[in-house]
Length: 380
Image (cartoon, rainbow, N blue to C red; front, side, top):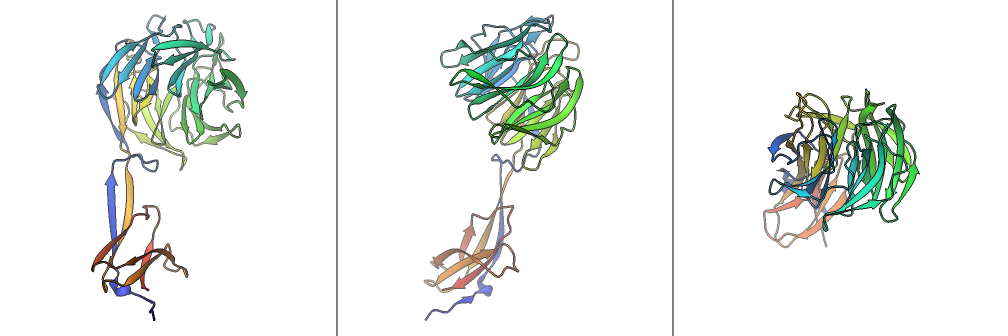
């Protein structure tokens, strides 16, 4: 006949904390900046996007109103830049993003005249190093932002000319059908904003209103319901660029030096990070392999900059493994139970095991930093 009893005296609770530098959406604690190889063509208003770990710097402008079709590719592994095929249209104040390994360059302006806005769309294939013209965006605009959700590009906000009026217009581009669709407008009409996508939700961050009045508004768009929701504002207002690293949205604000804030969508909170060490304005921001890059811009004395700065977040994963030391008769069968509250009347069976040696250390690898577990051992 089997005897059931709790072996309280045979139980030692161990707390084993393991720290590693793997990515985590739960923790984003600061980070460090590093200077990288400069971009070959100094410019501002450059837009960045990553394909297979390669960062592409697309278009931009140089002092004197010189618009550029220039495309240069940065390889973080070798810290080198390579010239690629230029766009057919020189442009600045545009937006770029990637779908299925193809880079799309959208909208902007072709010269310094505020009314000469672009609605043209070009697609770049890195495999063939060629550009292809696509269906134009319905609303010609500059200083817009784009984000990709489930293979669809969403063009958000921007400026119209010649009166530089901000819009909340949202238009969605399907690369498969090469067509555009109008979506629910952003509640706060604005331009020069940052956009990041996390778990299928598009976040529109900061910017300016009518190209002048600074804004710190954050609004989140759900493409499934075609609705917007207000989120916690950025701690500072202004012209922004954004990038997402490991589920955390980083907003880089045009400041002296550029401010950097991190947004956690789970807690709807912002934290402050070390600012970019380079004093620059109208820079480009992109993400490659978990690193945030800030590229180009205008210096304090109005010169074109080729600078490339990399911000590497200190993402910290914490796993808490609970351990039990069993001391008993070898060959006996034991059931290990757990509960999350010592006052609970019911215990949950975790595992049943035959003691192979004594003492024996059992580790519960399913326990986490965010849950508390209490254990008991019952002989079968």
